[in-house]
Image (tube, rainbow, N blue to C red; front, side):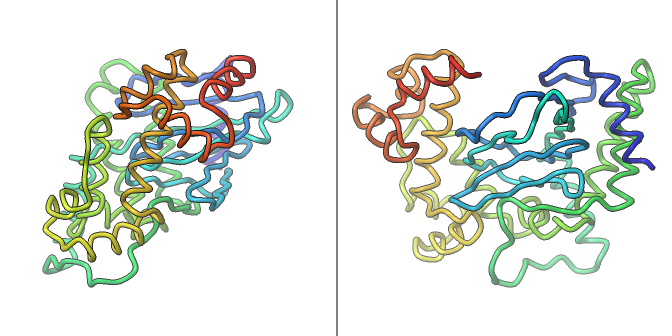
Length: 295
């Protein structure tokens, strides 16, 4: 089976835990042999495919557990809690991380819409979720195998063919079970995804709902409703979660609490600490100490 070939490729490439670059832009392999409880994280636009074991992502209280049967599609930057609760030396987690290139994904999504006839803005309806699970289908499996084989081969083949193979994989994702979420983020009618990108680049400064709505030409009320439908969070909740999650990751990486707070837009360290404790159940200082003791 092609999936077994992919698993063997990853297993033979990774001799120890960690994320490894493949030489193909945006394509990384990872191995985890230690159970890690869910912790604050920010998922960038990406596909995460598991070949052995399972991962967990929590968005606004909803758990998404995925393994070799389904891949996770995150078409927009999202504040989540993520972990590997079942990983062990006996049952290692093996997987592939594929970053979604906005330019290439947008071009493909619009080309597909154009090929299907007149491009129309999607009818107003409940937007697809910001995180989506999709079963592996033959097109996705074959495209991922071809991409990984190219990454392992290296040399001129990889330099010349990598972008085409990556495009082939993106095309499979746009046709797969997560297509509604992906096309809404990268095709016509992608206002909320553009707002998320706008917000993610401005975490350190003040941003109002009015400013966000104006960015995509919506009224405040319509924008608020559509944003929450797409992300499960209100715009204000989303900004706060993105800031706190980003700060938590910086603290886990060794940054001081006050430095992390300032880098995500908090003027007051005490306010940051109160909001952090309200969301995660412990102070950022204690949380950081626990992370350093238990990586």
